[in-house]
Amino acid sequence: MRDVTLVQIFDHPITQKYVKRSGMAHAISCAYHAFKLAKTYDVSPDLAAKAALLHDIGHYTWYRNGKWDYSLYKENDIHAIKGAERAHKLLIRLGEHPKSAKEIALAVLLHTDSYLPHGELHLKPLQKVVHLADEADEEPSGAHHYRIIEDDKARTMLATLDQKIEDYLKEIEIKKLNSSS
Ligand SMILES: [Fe+2]
Image (cartoon, rainbow, N blue to C red; front, side):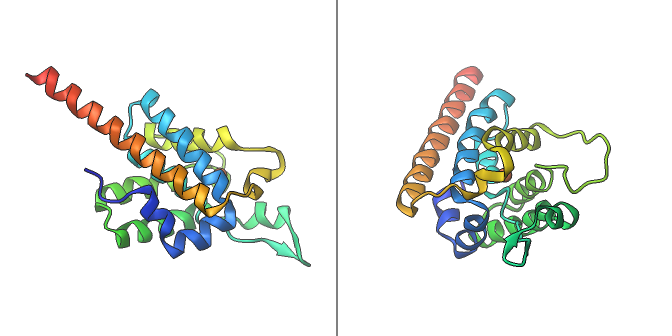
């Protein structure tokens, strides 16, 4: 039913390189939050979990004299733009349907408005879910980017979430069949 699983995304070297840079523990925690929020907002739990897992894949390291420079980051950051493109390329390579890859990329692009000129942004429910999932796991001073998770544990957690998503999608399918018969 799904073209790509979370475990497949996790196993890809691009994910290993870039999602680890911004924090795998944070990404997985967000994917779990997004799965729960997807039910509330009635959006695809598959797309929500994937977008949340990949939402920070575009982060760049802003170091000056060996130290993280927050002002440099604040001024120059485009991680959501970079991440949307990176997530899209990765998903297409893995065999994701182009329509889903676009939806996920858009949710990555709009998960934060920190890089946008001030104004009102009207998010679609999927985009809102990913934004809320990120907020739900945020810690003061960006500490959520530094939480560590073992590879084995990360993979197991994503396999568990894959199963939850599949069960939920089956449940929806059965409900649809019952209501149409
Ligand atoms: Fe984040």
